[in-house]
Structure formats: C-alpha cells, structure tokens
View (cartoon, rainbow, N blue to C red):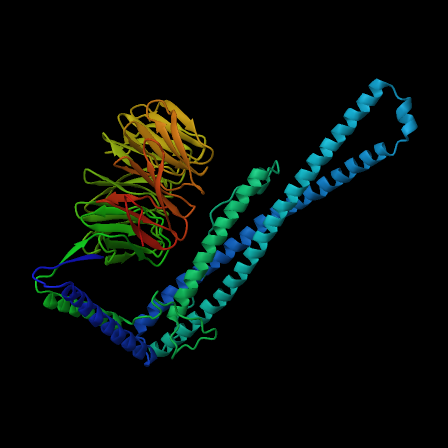
Length: 630
C-alpha cells in the first residue's frame, strides 16, 4: 500500500523524519514482540485435538491419499506411453542404422572398383555412375540425419522416463507417509471415541482418456513425438505440483506431540522466515492498529493519502480461474477447492468459501451473488459480501464452464454433456439440453438465444427459455472455446485449428481462419477485430467481417488464456509464465510481467489494474499501464 505523508505547520524537514520514524520504530518493536511470542508459542505444548478436529483430519488425509493414488496412476500410464514411444523409436533407430550400413557398404564397394574399369567405360556410363554415387551419398547423408534425430528423440523420451520414475518413487513414499499419518490419526480418534472406525472401500481411479498410440504415432512423425513429449512435460509438472502440495498438507497434519514424524520435514513457513500462530496473527493485527494510532497522534496536521498499488495474493493451489471484479472485490477460484474474495486495493482476503473440488471456472457476479462451478460436480451461489452459500445445484460431472447470468437465469455447461438453465434465486432447474460430448465451453446469451460449444465437435444455439435447439454447426474437432456474440455474429475457436464466424440466426458459416494449432482460447471482439490466442504460441487479431489476419504476436508458449481488450490494449496470459499487454492496432508489445508458472487464467481489467491468476498459486494485481507488480 502506497502512503504519501503531507505536512502542515511543521517547521523543518527533521520534524517530518521524526513523524515517519516514530511509527516505524514502534512497528519494528511490535514485530519483534509478535515474532518472539510466535516462537514461544511454537515451543509450547500443543493443545489436544478434539474428536471433531481429528475427524476433519481423517477426511482431509483420505482426500490426499486419493490424490496421491491418482498421481501414481498417472505416472504409471505415462511410463507405459513413454515406454511405447521409446520402443518405436528404438525400432526406427535400428532400421535406420541398418540402412546406413547398407548404403555405406554399397558406396565402399563402388569405390573399390579398379581404375582401369573406369577407363574402359564410355562417357555416358561414367556420368550415370557419378549420378548414382551422388544419389547414394545423398541418401546416406539423409539417413544419418534421420538417425541422429531419432536417437535424439529416443534420448529425450528416456530422460522423461527417468524423471517419471523418480517422481513416481517420491509419490510412493508420500503414499506411505500419508497412510501412516492416516492410521495414526484414526487410532487417536478411535481412542477418544472408544470404538473402531469402519473400514472405507477404495474408489476406482478415473483418468482422462488418451489417444490411441498406434493411431497417434502411425507415421512415426517427429512433430507428433515432440507433442507427446510436451504433453509428458505438462503431466510431470502438474503431478509434481500435486505431490508437493499434498506433502505440505500431510506435514501440517502431523502433531509433533501425539504423532511423531520420522522424516522431520520442515513445515512451510512464511516468506519472512517465521510462522505465526493464530494468536500471534491476532497480536499482529492489534499491533498494526496501535501503530496506526501512534501515526495519527504524532501527525499534528499530518494525514495519509492511500491508493491502489500492485499486489499478489497466494492461495493454496494453482489458479487457472479468471477473476470477476465487482464493487472493489476480486472474486476468483483456485485448485485448493476454494472461492476467494479479495480486496482490489490490497489483496486482503474478505472471505473464502470451500467447495468439494478444484475451482477452475471463472465466476459471474450479479445482484450481490457470486455464481461459480466446481469440479465437485456442483454449481454454487454465494453471497458476494459474506461468502455464505445460498444454494448449490448438482450436475452429473465436473463443472469447468463459466456461468452466464441473464434475466434471472444461470446458464452453464457440465462435462456430463449437458447445458443447464437454473433459476438464479433458488437454483431450481428450469431445463437441460444434452449434447453429444462434454461442455467445457461457457455459454453466451444474446437476444433470447444461448450459444455454446461441445466436445461433440459442434456449436449450439438453444432457445433461452426452453432449451430447444435452434441450430447446430459442425467443426472439425472438440470445441473448448467459448463464443462471443456481437452484431448478429457468433465467433468461436475449435481444436481443429480454426476460428469460426457464424451467423447468429442461422448458424451459417461466414468465414473461418486457420491457426497453427488447437484453439482453446475464447475470442474478444471489439472495434471490428477478433482477438484470440492459439496453441501455436500466437495471439491473433482478425477482421470481424472477413477473417483477414490483421496481425499476430508470438509468445514463448501455447496461449490458452482468453484476451481482454481495454482502452486499445490487449491483455492476455501465456504458458510461457508471462502476462502480455499488446497494442490492439499494431500488436506492439507494451509490456510483459513474469509469473512463477503457466498462466491459463483470463485477465480482468478495472480502474487501471490488471487482475489475473497463475499456476504459481498466486493472484496478481498489476499496473495496467506499466505491468508493474509484486
């Protein structure tokens, strides 16, 4: 928080220094007192856990155990896939090595022909033999090049296999630690309750489907191998994050007195090197109030002018949700299963609400209510001021679609293949429409029609009141992108590497524009331009009428984030760990801001600040003009 001290009636600059130094001195002393108390409390005996606390720990540890089991399954499947690719590449290497030897033997044999035989040949024969030798040498060079490339790819796969096995072993150790913690807590709970807890049956581990490897690698194409390696890297990073987070959670569950730990893994501490207990945090809040009082008392005509400055807020998990900014509050979800309400000026938590699964969708805020989906298969309505749960509505699978709230209705998709229309006040289901695939796309509503994409390769137009199908338009692959509807047109991307412009009334295709890879990003349409990202590491600007490419801007990673355009600037994130600000007319890069990991979140811009999440577990508030941030 920036602070400007303005003085009136002070005779010298020394008075200003004294006014500033006094609260700083008090603050330093108070922080020392708080720190000392925190350390004293950390050495004191912990209070005994209640049965309720232990039962909550059991539930959390069960969730952690399930997540570790899933990570082990992912590592196992990844190992099988990489092993299969390594086998194919080894076969290719062996075949290319045989080809190289054969070509080299043929060249050597030709070079061994006596010179007198060369002299006996005619000019035509000589030229023919030279051409044949040149062809053989060309084939040999090409075979050597392909052999080197195949060996390089095989080595790359081998490195991923080693890494996957190492991480899998870490996950196995974590599974043992989690099970041991769980047994200790359960035994303690059984002792307090005087009864044996019932055994819990394990659930099957469900993993998302992967393409058939024989089909994917049918041509042994280098680019496909590179794509598999990229996907493997993403899975390894994701599962490493999951295992690391669970390890921290399990460490925090361990009670040093009742449940002695073997590995002595340090509990994560705050960035200043010491952890505060809840009591110490209360003391710190009181100390801040005392310090502020000292500033006011010493001011004698001094007053404070406060303004918004960049900040970051750390959540308990990755942040791929995009924020909604309303009335001085940033609402956003996290993979830690929570919905956050943060103060726009300081990043301070107003409230959090815990759901039963990761929250990766963007929230919508209307009439004092926050609407958001969760991967726990539910849609939530929360009081925007308090976080109080007003209602939930179950769906048949994960909800990663963003809600659209229009005319007292909430429209949202689910991976159970359905689009839902719910009463905004009560959550009562008004209608559902079943598509042929998962609906991760977020609905757009215009003129009484709901537009949305589906994994069944189609874009849908549905009657907003009844859910009746107006029209569908086929694409060449799954539609993750969400539509933008304006001036009688529907703009949307598809994983068939295209951006589509469709007539909003009929679904007739007006134009398509190819990109270099899949389009997960959703378009922003303004001033006759369609802005959208692509998995080909580019941001595109297309003419709304013709689809003509006005410009592209390269990034250093696939662009899943969807752009926001404000005051002639395009703001967007990339998996290269950066947030970009680009001139909307020329694509000139105005600034970039680095984050700790990939940025899948969609930015929101309000009052000169850009709000966005990152896979480094943080929500960022950046200066919209300069990109300055913490």
